[in-house]
Image 1 (cartoon, rainbow, N blue to C red):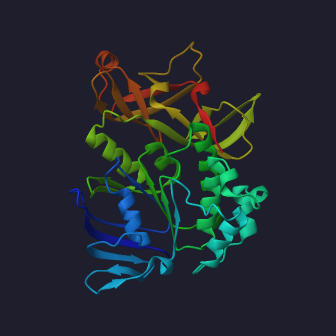
Image 2 (image 1 turned 90 degrees about the vertical axis):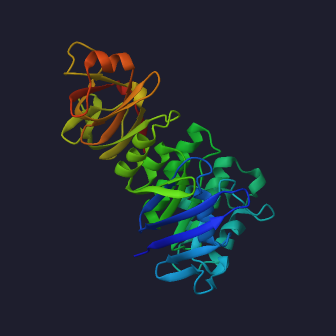
Image 3 (image 1 turned 120 degrees about the horizontal axis):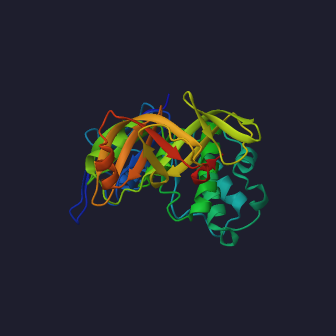
Length: 353
């Protein structure tokens, strides 16, 4: 089983100081935090692009860096694949040649180029050059090249930050396909909590070069948001819906033991739906005679007050956010532990394949 042990210190001339320690297993681990918190620096240290001033990095039993032992493995000998935000493809090479470059440098596991092209749907791009590709196509090629290194660890530095919402969703789907196909341990840098919820199993929360929390996404990410009361936080919910089926001409599934009506057909037995906290209304009991079909029962876990709104954390078997006004909280006398019903319009949900 691949495992990463990281404990490094590194200071920049501008005064920023990284002093971080964490472990990551063979799943997807996100490095989450605001810009300037040290996320990309950590990836650069692991990849060997940057040499830490002090510390130790061990990947799957192999020491990549140890300041006390004077060991620093060069980047080309580290069994990692790197996906950058700006792709960094070789402009003079075709897509096939860019992918072959990844294969030629492969240090460990064998991954077939044709299968990569099939999963990422880039087979028709193989003879083209990067300058002729769209941003989404370049990102898929960059991911393919990193996969073909057969890495022990895949590093992704904000791979979705420069993409618009529609394209971002499509690339997320390709990422999920690739991670499910090859089960490569992954370290994902992101400041977008929706991406972290969708892709990651574990999260390391960073602030000003320090690890302030770590653990399962559903616990550590929410704890960080609740603790820091970030006024710029825009909650996005992601629910896993099981036992999806068509009933009486419409689609529905289950969130735990509760029924959730879905906005469109889906062929698989499980689907994820995304929606914003502002699309969730709260009631004290099931509301009769309204057009909102989804009414999920749950209990309030936490209330996070801001200037003109309150974020309400509700446990419905899975965790979700509701955004309500301060007046609504006062009038309903909402408190942690209270039983509530979450009202969600079917049209507010987005299906994720």
